[in-house]
Image (cartoon, rainbow, N blue to C red; front, side, top):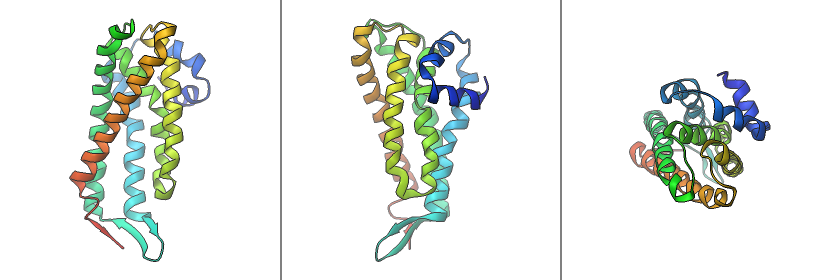
Length: 196
């Protein structure tokens, strides 16, 4: 799999790309090595640079920055937890499949999570300038749409079950992201390790 064409295709022509993805034979290790490990690094690295080097402008106070040690700790914790969260979300989504008259394997669910997460991972570049981070919400919404398009192909979800399955799955993924964020902030001590 070539990274750049896959990212481009899933972002620009997902309806054509999902059937290709569904038919690909790939294992968990290869999907991580060739896609997830690379893209999940984007928000972690960009967030580190944005928070330690550039900082967040605070009116009347200057710029708030995170210390390098706290920033590095946050980078590592966020990155590792993001990798784990993708797999845990895939397992949960696979286990939910029968509830929505769907079927699929862990690898199909992981492909769904990974490729639907592409917009959020790519939008992680916005973390270089922290005030732009709220725009990543738009990328997350596009990711939900990608998930919606991918469900019938990867999990064989009937048309009438796609929306409920997508909503429950989106909640699972959102909760996973909240956990990653909370644990990263708690571990790195981001709230207490800032300076102006």
